[in-house]
Length: 100
Image (tube, rainbow, N blue to C red; front, side, top):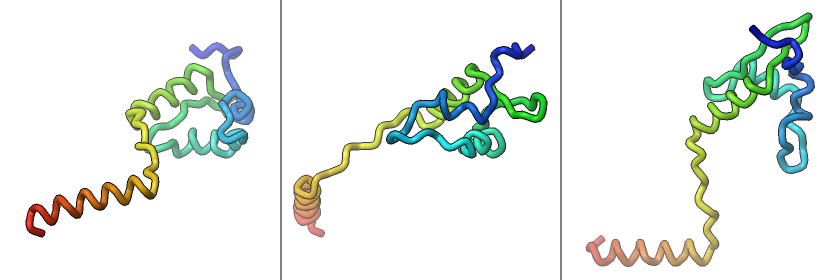
């Protein structure tokens, strides 16, 4: 049974979600998360009096599932041009030593 006091209209979610680059998540994104999801993971919601609503618990589950799917893998730091040149030079030397 869902506690009616815990329901949050999707239109109110952007105010609850941390901002990205100083911009709030667009309200259309919250509806897209319910309808299509992200990579097959959908945000649970119910229709109440003509409004789609979710709960903080369901929002937490949605973000946790997205985090598990991505494995929270951090992208490697960007390489500087000098570092990239050194790595290319090492690779070229290794190929030359192998006879390529």
